[in-house]
Image (cartoon, rainbow over all chains, first blue to last red; front, side, top):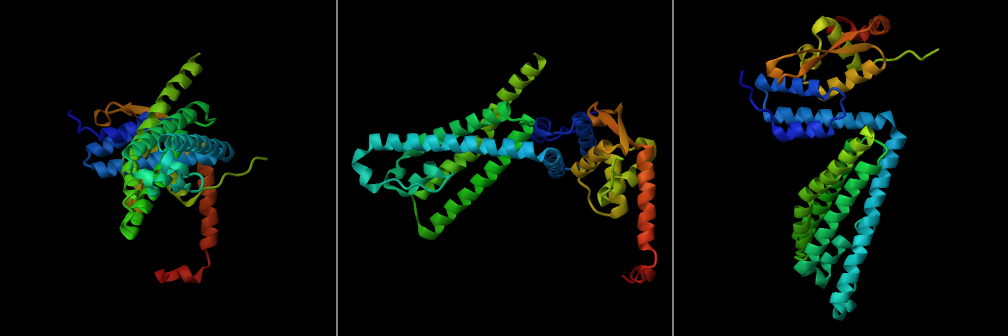
Length: 224
Length: 111
């Protein structure tokens, strides 16, 4: 019997983030329905419903622990982002002392300076965007490792919650920037949009990379 | 004395579907049964969420069954109600029937 291959990314996503203890039987149920002619969109919808309902279930089972882990992950992100912002500012001041009168606009926490430079004159410089992007990705990678290694709830759940909120937050930020460009013709903001377009997929990838490392070390600890 | 567990509307549907299907109840058959009865689509995620809760409450129990080729060689997780679960469904039914009785708004299908 030749089986129609199920969407691989969706299956991987379920395997990676599904909190259901009987994940094999869940995959079997999905495969059975898929072989009966259900489409990829149906498969993805089921996978997302299974993963996110599992996430919500874990949240309900221990709200205090979940909220504690989640808030601490975002605090770590904030501290790292703030540090990255400071590095960017110092680097800029050292490289462009003559432009200091322009000043550096700092948006409120937690957006900080990575995004804020776009409206200043220096922000149109591509190397600034590149460096900001690199720091942003590094920040997320470190938070991913923190989520996976230090969280008191299941690492996969923590990563999923963080990724979801980050992507929603970043997507909202990107839409705001696009609106700023169209309404106020601020070309400088375009660089931030470019940064976001690159950072958004990289965000998930870097956190997942950090999480995978963390998961393997967590399982080694468990075996030990 | 431990508090009596309660059933949400969807949990009750899942319990009834398991009772109707009998021994072969598993994720897909439960979802199909509810879809056929209610006429609306049921996400598998909500079925698994409900069966996990019901199992935690001790109202159903599960066991791994046979693997078939169309499932990619993966076993089914079969569900059946426990005596505690059956008792609770019966009590819920009695409570609902009591609530239903004597409601003029629901008579004659005019509502």
